[in-house]
Amino acid sequence: MRAFVQTNKLLFIVTMKCRFLAGLAFLAAFVFTACDETTDHIGISLVNNMDNLDISTDTFTLSTRSIVVDSVLSLNTVGYLGKIRDPETGNYITGDFMTQFHTMENFKFPTREQMLSVADGEVVADSCDISLYFVKSYGDTLTSMKLRASEMIEPMKEGVPYYSTYDPKANGLLREDGLIKEHTYSLVNYDVPEATRKKNTYTPYLRIKLNDEYTDKDGYVYNNYGTYIIHSYYMHPEYFKNSLTFINNVVPGFYFENVGGLGSMAYITVSQLNVYFRYLSKDTLSTGVASFSGTEEVLQQTRITNDKASIKKLASDNTCTYLKTPAGIFTEITIPVDDIYLGHEKDSINTAKVVLTRINDSHYNKYALPVPSEIMMIPADSLNTFFEKGRVTNNRTSYLATFSKTYNSYTFSNISGMLSYMNKHRGSENWNKVVLVPVTKTTNSSTGEVTKIVHDMSLTSTRLIGGSENPHEPVKISVIYSKFK
Image (cartoon, rainbow, N blue to C red):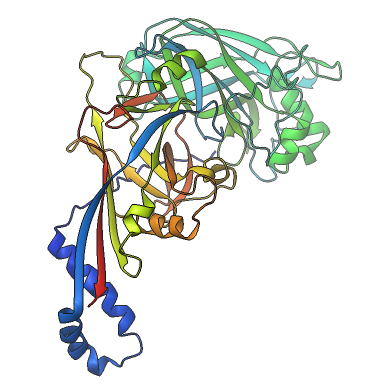
């Protein structure tokens, strides 16, 4: 089993004084004018250009509004399971999720002769379970919840853009006469000793035991689901050569849905199908476990059920704008590109800064939804294609900003590339509009490079200063221009 850790690297935004920015602006201008000169003339050029550089600044008001998002592309590596009441709207939010299971290349069980778990002359599994591990959760960890685990009859397909409203059950992907197991739980697992739960190395989990008699789709009966997997291996070891053959021939996946309880949502980071057995290893009795994990190599998809009427009502509040997940509300910004370029057609735009301030909640609620930690700015017409094509931010037409608790705001320190893009695409649909989208990013632990960006499917909400009836200071963009005299 390989463990995958998603790290969120904070993006530190440094606010620079105008004088320093002007120096940078000059330096950028100088680099372009000096590119054909030798280094012998750099000092002379620096002195001459400084006298000829003209710096100017201006600010412009931005128009913002909330937009309702019916669904989002659901390709997270986290599964959301549970049901909560949104303290902001009173709306019920339910999370159900599907996961497939990954197998190592050319996976092998011990040989039949090595296996010591035997019944009636046949190799069997001692037991089998699915463990759902979660690092984060929302709500009351003590409340009683109930889930249903259902075997799928066929897998969901790679390359298909499944959105958060997609229902595997309604689309006939669950096996009607297949394995169905219900499990009552709380997020505090009392089956685990308290001393163990308090250890730093402990990861909370839900365990669904699959030890009842199981009949496969061809009518063969096994004493439990794990025995079915072992027999599938001995009959067709080629089915275990990689995840694709395993998913298409042995375990298409499982669908986990909330069927009872209210008050918690678990953020499942790893799903693990475990088969336990005993075998002989070098003349020694050993206990083995074959683990197949839901990881980045295979599909995971969350289905979100939300009350659309409540979301629309919230978004109609024009005294602010909202960022709300999962599949809730984004903020759209209209940028006055014509005004920004008016009289500056031949100038360079060196920086364009936007600060979006959060409106603090007036009443304390211990179950208030957290603030989105990271948001992305992208052109409005790229809202779906950006995620469907698996793109990452490029700081030209897409930008990331991290919420600052110190300043209670999100800051996009320089979106000059976006202005240039809009200026070149005048007249196209939504050409001067961008959307703010809460996201989750994955970074390379060695280089810090962003390798993946997906929709934030966790429970978050915040209000931003803005809207058509904004009672606060207007939302603005600050622009610094430069040109040669």
